[in-house]
Amino acid sequence: QVLLEESGGGLVQTGDSLRLSCEVSGPSFNNYALAWFRQAPGKEREFVASISRDGHSTTSDSVKGRFTVFRDSGNMVYLQMNSLKPDDTAVYFCAAQFAYRIQAQYFSPSDYDYWGQGTQVTVSS
Image (cartoon, rainbow, N blue to C red; front, side, top):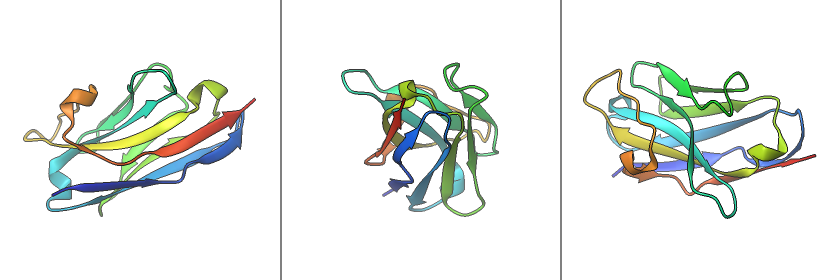
């Protein structure tokens, strides 16, 4: 059983920064590809960033240059968010998927079996 718990969300102003954290509990953390998604009210869940087992990452066009995803050698994955905009307001979810290939990354919500409960990020103008 893999459990994920996000933290670090909050209310910030345009241009501020936040770092979201996700603790991944369960066996073989290093065997999982990880990702961040977000969901705004009335919208579908959308891909934000992913990171492979060996640390290669991808970010969506909407956050490229502002957001960075990274994982540590323990059981944590982070989303560093800079230059936040009101359009970034959403509930942010951490996701994990077992990956046979160390370079694998996945970009669709349907690719992931394990999810956290989400953390709210609100950016005021």
